[in-house]
Length: 376
Ligand code: SOE
Image 1 (tube, protein in one colour):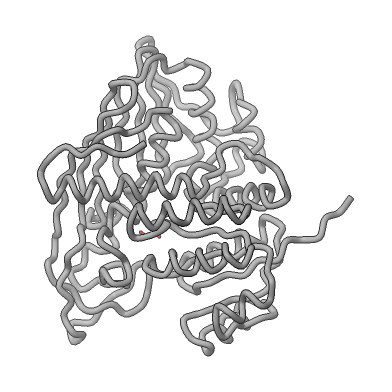
Image 2 (spheres, protein in one colour):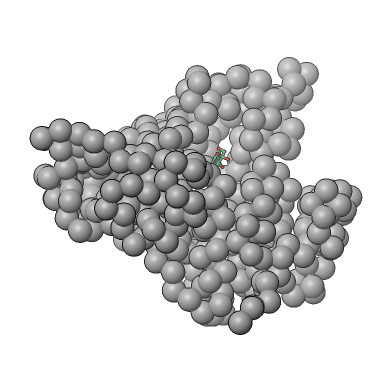
């Protein structure tokens, strides 16, 4: 029997708002309205996106009673908007970092549970089919006991000293930048694939440029102007973090937004007693499987395909899938949860809280030059 599409409202019209809009449609929802930073911006994007409602305010959005609200706004607004959506009984998808502190994130987890709404965070890299394949193989024992989880997440969109964005302004972006923005993805994926939990961290952060032009409002790749007022930069361009894990293994991550030529290079390696495995987000159609007897490259859709990979394989081997497919699959599982399903590996506000705790611990460790425990 055909089901009526879920009605989705999107808050935020930047780069990631556009990703949400397309992915929502691919996942079978109807985008019914948009709220921008001003009523004029709402109207501009409602027309550009071809959606019926341009909201003037968040109250206006709530009054339209969408099934799901998707928050794609600067970090400092997440907590307030998410709480209002939850209290209005609306299901919510909120971009990471879920809140500026673990305390605020925890409040959102409790509020969502009390209201009985579905509340998810787009750790969408979990939705690459080969990520699921590696996870399934690790669960099946192919990697053996985990010794080491390591890798990096490198970008270069802030390499230019004139580059700026709301992410650089702590009033909008929060107290952590590179680690909250992309280190959170790395940790989520590393824990998801390896099954390890990071229990303590020792981190070092650096600021490559202590001053940048005041933000232009663009979220990603915004070029500032040398004539703009100067903003003192207080958040990190790079972070290196060493982790202890639940099983006694070690983790290590290098996070940077100033690495020339690296556009979105999220790399994870898990090394165990029987084998190793590598996922590289910029080449998501194949993974490296390491074994003492010899290493192999496994292509999506080939070999012994796990059920979890098969579920996400939209097209046969040789027909490339990518970032937008992963995002749409994440939303599809969110919508399935809204309809009462329990999809495997759906990142919820609990995972957003987990990330917030890791971010807080990284900042504290960097500030004190000490090991800091990460609450479970
Ligand atoms: C910018 O660094 C950004 O858009 C992140 O905010 C996203 O989470 C990441 O997927 C791509 O890069």
